[in-house]
Length: 110
Length: 121
Image 1 (cartoon, rainbow over the protein chains, first blue to last red):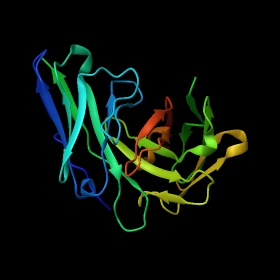
Image 2: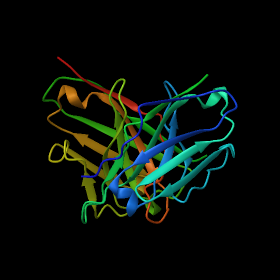
Image 3: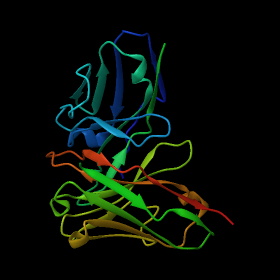
Image 4: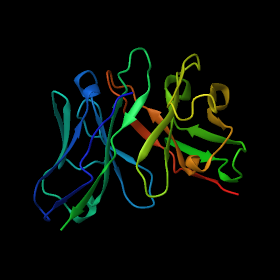
């Protein structure tokens, strides 16, 4: 099965820009989606596979990809953006239509 | 309002069984692939299983294959996860999630609030 690798933790100063990355072979064939999860809450989609933001997600969140790496960028991070962020994509092993998640990145806003 | 509501979690002994349910509302359930995702205490998200719109295709993560069974009843707008031969490693919050229609991507656009499963003697 495929794997997606994320940095375990990233920090950013309030108002600054931060990029969270997700690496994996499956990203050469499939798009990544991004989720935000705050303590005690269910995950929430912030960027879909086409790098679009669902309704209600601030425009400071954006997504991009290149080769085997997908990125989530927060431009002008706010205190409320402190959370765990996960990427996912299709598991690209043959005809198996499974799904794989990255290990998650804990974002701290300083 | 588009909503997913899980139920059926609880405490179960090792080797036991449990059936989770997920009630969908606010959208045409039969138009979407559906998924189960779990999160062990203090750990990350782990995809568990998915099922095609009409139930004709099902896929599982290797660690649950042969023990868990995903199913759906489109007439009842409901998703299920039958879990057998449970071990401590299955202890987690279990979420159901709708897979949005994004080509070449697995976008989980709607999530339930989760139901806790604890496997312990």
